[in-house]
Amino acid sequence: MIGFVGIGFGGCRLGRGSRSRVCVSASAGDGVTVVVGATGRTGKLVVKKLLSDGGSGKVRALVRDEAKAREVLGTNERLEVSVVDVKEKDERLETSLADAETLISCLGSTAIPSKDWEGGKNSPIRAVGLGMGNVIESLSPGKIKKVVVLSAVATRNRSFIFKLVDLIGGAWTAMEMAEDAVIAGAAEKGYEYVVVHAPVLKDEGSPVQGVGIKLGDVGKSIGPLRRENAANVCVECARRDLGEVVDISPYGIAEEPTRDWDGLFQELTECPVVLKLEFSSLNKEKFQNWLLDWASALPTNSALFPPLPVPFRVDPTDEGARLAFIRVSVDGRVAELGALNIALEESALVVRREPATREFALPGERDILRLLVESLDRVVN
Image 1 (spheres, rainbow, N blue to C red):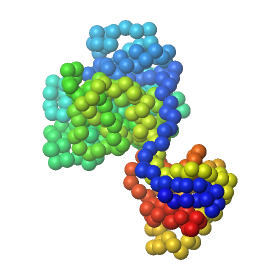
Image 2 (tube, rainbow, N blue to C red; image 1 turned 90 degrees about the vertical axis):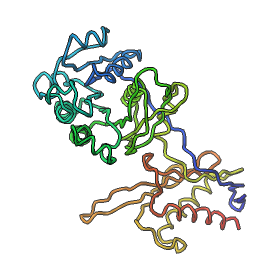
Image 3 (cartoon, rainbow, N blue to C red; image 1 turned 180 degrees about the vertical axis):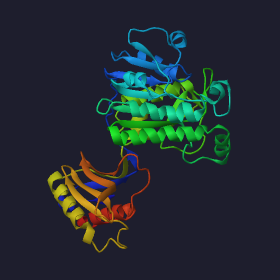
Image 4 (tube, rainbow, N blue to C red; image 1 turned 90 degrees about the horizontal axis):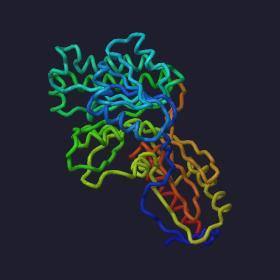
């Protein structure tokens, strides 16, 4: 137990690292949501999920076969069917996407040659890679707000087996092309995006009913995942503000069906708590003044040895201080690598690592946290 009664801090104890609770928006929105690959095995489930959410926004299914779409998707006052072939960048495609605010892509193909390839006319490279490129190019800048693309694991870090399969038909290359198109489009057109790296998908009857989610592309098979849950994850990603989260890998877990989607996605968007000091009593004003003085003097603190591998900037906040780790390029541009946000919350000092997508320690983070605890201890003793 560390005491801070010398400046009215009271008693303190170290807590284990945890994640904070952050509010996540889950509104469906009233704009037009376009689903590409809408009659596929996963795409039709995405359409079904969107139409069952009780919202008022239009759901537009982009399909090649209208008769199949009516049979697979049925009818609904919110459902529109647009007959286009995304492999062809033409006026019909642009018209179908002109008012789209949200896009969910379930474009896919078999990894090995099949009748779905239509003799090569519908190969993965054409249907997924080139098709997604055409879709992204046809989106309206300023109108489109969110793009969610269902992809696969290991698109950029393929195992030996995935590399062999890719040699047959280019399925992973096609998905990487699609992801590249989405990323480039985001920079050009200003939309948010999420790539969902799905493992092996199982249809109804699979005993794996729950869902877990990891950040990024895990680069290996972590499945299987029920196809219905892959659709659910895509829709939830479209609905939510996930901040800087742009890549996720959902996987199946042998539990009851996932119902707490808020809690599941909250874990992705919360900045991890790397240090927590709890107080029995506290003089908030004195503490904040001390903390800002300590942080401001940190760059020249001789106890911080060896020096940090990267420079950092100290920014005062309403609740404490933010240490931003930066990198300066040869042309003078400053890029932030991440930050430690040190804040007073109720009766505790909480240090969070930012952004939420960073799972590993920042350069020199452990030394700074050690020095923070030691400095507090010296204030008392």
